[in-house]
Length: 143
Image (cartoon, rainbow, N blue to C red; front, side):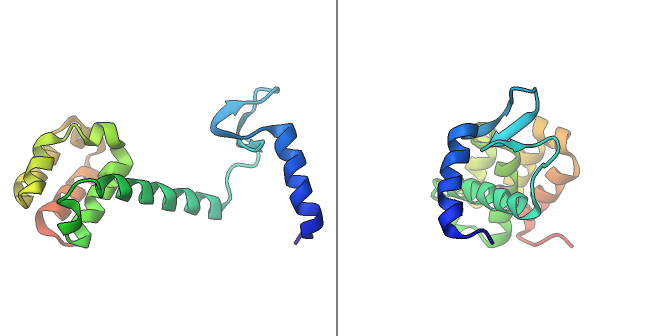
């Protein structure tokens, strides 16, 4: 492990030279890059970084869904199905599922599942939609 007396000033120097970007960009040589000079073409992401990104994205989805009063009343299986939908769709597209959301607010789970399946999203993602809808309808984890 690099000693702290080197690590901290080195981080400042590298940040100064490389910049800090939350979104991918092409560097001066046209290489897809992100963060503080991370070369996505040859370095990519480490397993722990991928897992951290997944954790953060799941948490973001959960936080967004927590804005709905009915969400906290759902069992963990139904919450997981909706988090998966949110993860895939994003907040703006998820919010368009007004019929499904209405059914969920009234604990009409079979109707909510049917509404989820009656969508362009379901046609696009196929088995994922069927699995999520089944979890919403039954409150059971897939086997």
